Length: 77
Image (cartoon, rainbow, N blue to C red; front, side, top):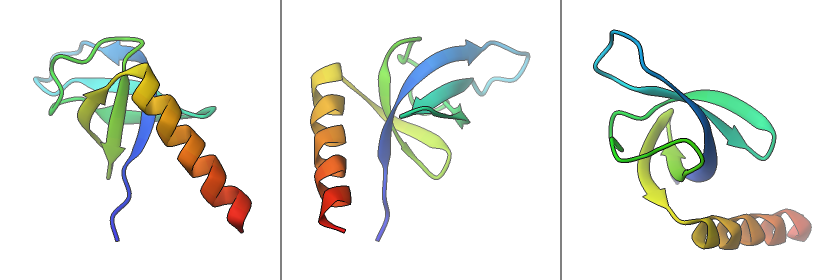
């Protein structure tokens, strides 16, 4: 089973590379993520991340709903 999780873009690195990288927060854990597949993403946006790559942009309401589902799953343990 593959898992993709939402995170919030904190910053975007604009280096010489054609591949954009961003610092993305997952509930306080911050990781460097490739933003190559979501060129429309900006700082403050929520993105779905799988295997180190942001694969889609989602709105804040969708992200909040996903966080609620994850909390429910955690409480079932």
